[in-house]
Image (cartoon, rainbow, N blue to C red):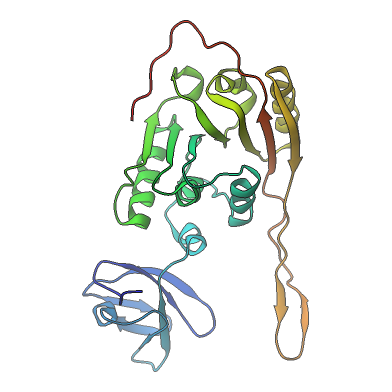
Length: 269
């Protein structure tokens, strides 16, 4: 990997694990551990450190996707990495996939999708709230260093939007996903997979009913609980707090493609 450079984002981490997302600029960064000059990070390697005037070492790392998601600006609750991983794996989202996403939020799911589909794939995000779309675009551009060319954001309600495309995968993070299922089924290829994230079981039940009515099969719903452990030389026990219920993930496969409506708008890249 190349050395750290000016304008790059880094995770500044203390010896006790406290961390900050900081941009490398010719200016100071201050915390309760003291002050460092971020310009001194230029030319450093990952894992090198800068020492504050108080004698504390602050280590420098490029942010992982999980690091960035936890630290990025947001107006909504993020989708946690534990759920993002499950969405990618159980949705079988892979390089070259064309993914339609609705409910961009702050962009955490979109970042994971873009990583998964790679440069040969494409992500089309639909978000009805313009301010969320703007923030997500900023977060995504900041992570990649530029707006990804294989990503489109459409500001619209998914229920009011007419598109002509064949998506390989559809991923939903919507308050009422069941209202969109019948329309979205037309956009998903036969054998394609739909993944929906909902916090309440009543939402899951209504979504399940619409999936069954629109020729989806292999429907499954699950949740993931993440419990950290405190491990050192003398002990190993569960942490006092955990990331418990965050949402139900529903996965379904499209087995029959209905005839498209008479009039649609064609999506063009």
